[in-house]
Image (cartoon, rainbow, N blue to C red; front, side, top):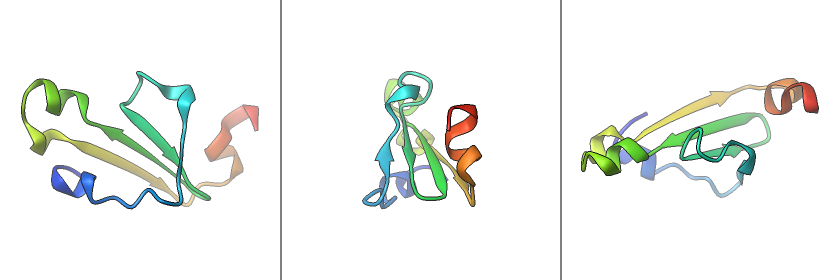
Length: 69
């Protein structure tokens, strides 16, 4: 999703994933999903329409934690 829809995401039941700082602006982990939110390019270019969120849903424990879980 892009633009203003990114700001409308409800992240209330998600927790921030600090391990990925600087890879994406922010990653958020839910019970069975991950959300990556990218705002940096949009801010640098003064182009809010370039904000992007990628949602990975329906993940199992491995998808949420990888080999470390």
